[in-house]
Length: 452
Image (cartoon, rainbow, N blue to C red; front, side, top):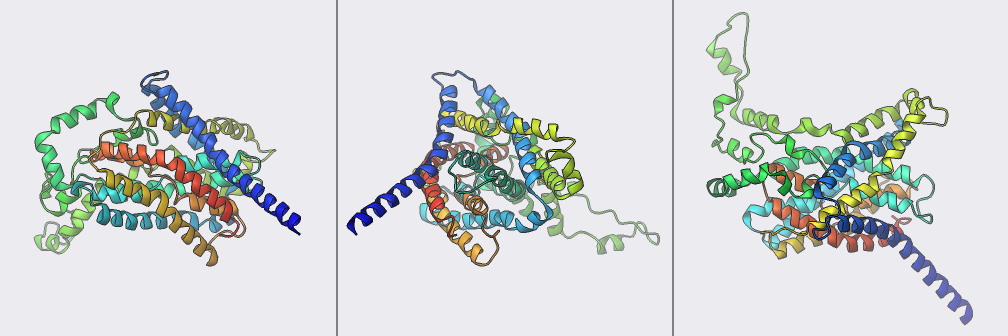
């Protein structure tokens, strides 16, 4: 009897050790790629200059990532899948909402400087739902003994890609306006350091790599109001743009074309006029970037069997095109990790956010939010919101709560001229700490994935 118990204990220990290794090894692969990028871009070596990493990030954004999304999402999605996957984008919204609540708690506990309160909430709420989950899925599925079975990579990439458009919409609407400079802080900057800020904006070489690490060309989207507290000024009636610059709707009629009474009756209310002005200044038109366009195109092609038959399948007439795109897509994960290494090589920039707030955001984002995510996914499974028996589906949902803050937030900070150095420093430390938090939670996910 004792011999049987000893053997059972040894087998359980061996199984536990193998599970831990199967969870850690994918991260070690990504870490190795990141270290290579860090070594190539380190200021002491400078084997590869920053400009090369910026070009590589543009290739990822405009070529490698769209190819990966189109080939995997287009092949996996069908009309039935589209209906079954509805909870994936909803989960992004839920994770963001919970992150906002955690950010408010961090503000109450850590008490950041007044001008960084909204920044604290944003950096806690919005995680990386694109490049890092794709890299994690690719690395996990590259391991032979992964717990997700056949077609692991194609399903994982499809699930991550299916949610990307929601994140982009949130960034270009909610995040864009929340990241505008606070009105009081903007007045101080405007009086003292406006010239210095303009010189830094012109000098592309001084711009941190994180500004272009995930969304190259963001600085080209700058408008005359990008670096101003536009909403605050509009709604406090102190905008530099006068009320007359927002024209009323022209009202014409056959009976009385120039009747002041008819114009007065149909005049647009001031509040509606201001909301419309803010909507016009929202850069929603920039959502259709290459990755988003690839997602929409893949959904359309995948849901129409007649079109899908031209691109996917052994006998597809255009299978050579799809194969070529798959070859290019293979460069996506290593390129992303090399760019991340180049970003980390720049080191943290001086920040006025404060050590306590930096730790608070990192703990809330990397440790507390994943625990809440486990509860949300488990509850969703009990309510039959999830695809039955699909472990990869649940893994991707859990990853949406686990990743560090989106690198894209650094680009938005640069675009709005608000908390640029703070975003750079916080993203640096979060990605360093994420090496440990991701290791911990991936081990946990591998253990509980069959029970959630």
